[in-house]
Image (cartoon, rainbow, N blue to C red; front, side):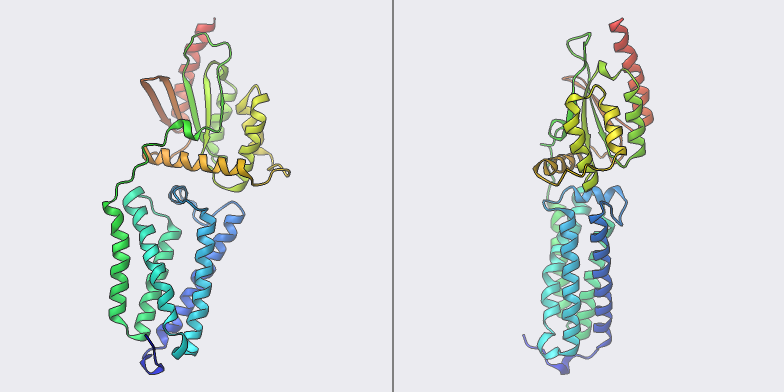
Length: 327
């Protein structure tokens, strides 16, 4: 299909598209910079949950979106200056991007029921860009076709069942330690799910570290995804076998700077994968609050607690019960 300059009835929408594309590219570039610093413009749990389902790194997807919009901005500029050569290119770029985006948004809404603000903003930017381009070229029929394709990719997720039943607590464990001089053959195994950036998690960890924690079996899992936290968890895992108090060790590691001699390697990739599994497990249970305690009292009895207050109250009773057996 060949465009001729005479078919461009409106240049104002194309100029608006250039500005919007530039703003979108800058927005995602800033988010990419924050990602490199181990943080994000989006501080919600929903963004973390959505990121945990990606098979590629979230940072790579955002950086790719930024690069795409920078290229699109350049193409839009040339299509304004040289419409006979470049008029078709913005539409060619936007069409697959919108269909891809529709699938991502549909998965969030229908499958995991969590909405990433950055993803929603990007979807709006792409839709408005397509609207402006089609308005500039008066291609209403093409706009309708693209919107129908976006809707198809979006709604396809509504008829697909999300199956993550294979996610189990064992697949997300980072570090474990069994009870010392257990008075019984079987004592509860407690899995604590935490984040290095969660003050309530550290409050609970401090409480357990000052209690009779050696009476129970402990397992540690995390939802952290940023690089600093991953490196600290890697240090925690390496030092754990020689530590008598894993909770005090975890606090020390949290308060320290990431070890300079640690680099991202296969070990840190394994930790990141386990943490994403933890996200999936909690989402499966509709739990979006940490800290979380999973108390396995027997093969047939499991108790899950959320929040530091309820966890401390339950653990107090549990510590008292098993302390009496040792006296």
